[in-house]
Length: 308
Image (cartoon, rainbow, N blue to C red; front, side):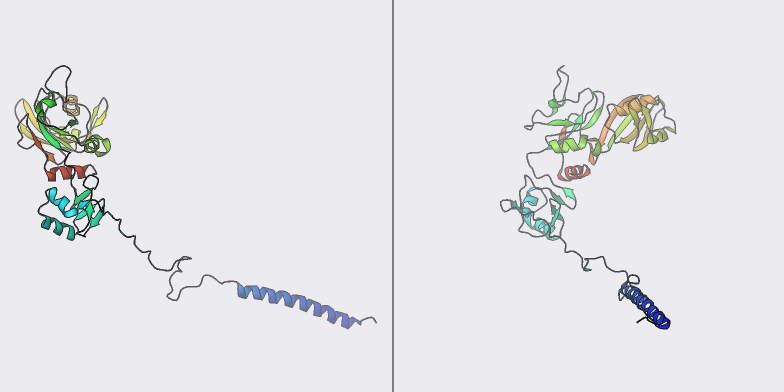
């Protein structure tokens, strides 16, 4: 039987209502299920990253520097000249001693003096008693070599009584005098001569003529030489005479005859040059042609200056 027109319309409307109702309910469901922005924490702050518990990771335990076959640390310190064993135990207990970069407070720790790197109050200790570093006041006229094939006076002449096989650190030309370091510590020598670790060197220089007042500014800003600009770290006039001037100058550069070439470039040739200091090591009142062994503090400070 054919459906009447009103019935057909009612059925069509019912279909549209069912279809539209279903779509409305789906959209509404999706709208209800979709997050409406990030929820805030109860405290109102930002949410923690996924996987974070809010707890800090536990600190890694300090590296174990104990060597069961070694020597007690307080004995090593006492042998190095830090005082009595009791005094060295106090240094350890106060946390002033580091072994291989690790602070040590326990008195039972043992170390191998041949391999351990020990610092006290930040100063490196040289524990290898076979290594030695000397200061020589090189006289004028002596060449900076351990042996000269031409038979000229050389550095070996001043350490002939030493049993160690020494070599010199850096050099001074034959006409210059003053502080030279002699050592059998290859690592220290390499650090002192490497451009990355060059320490400051101080010279007392006598030059011809009376220098002008603006010469200091020139030296501090740099003097153009054949092999590049050379710059002084410090410069001061020590004494003036009618025909000559005495100047103290500090440089890091280790280039050959650099001080003489700088003064030649500004028209004041050097008549006398004495190196008085290398880093923390001073010449002091050491007589020309004599040597002395670096003290513990001097050596430790020098080693620290080059990152040892």
